[in-house]
Length: 85
Image (cartoon, rainbow, N blue to C red; front, side, top):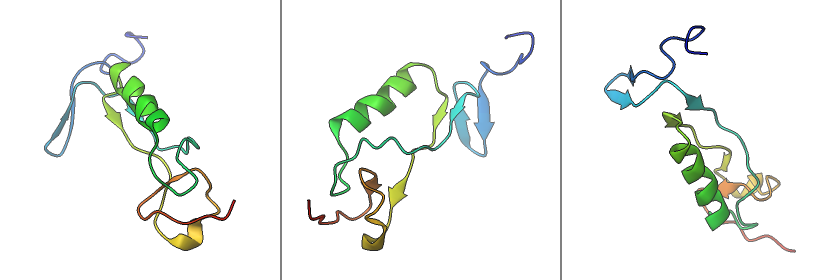
């Protein structure tokens, strides 16, 4: 892979942000949040493992920003939402 992408594992920079490599994990919904939108230990472990695994940058996934987005069950929320279960 080094021959195909010779700069992939070298340092990179976006503006003033310096990255240890150019591997970027894109945003994705994990479904690891609590039903009320709070972060769980599982979500933190998931992201920590990706960082330790070598991702130079991690773009976190789905984050609901309003109570009307409660249908995004188990996604992390900017404001916790009460859900009837």
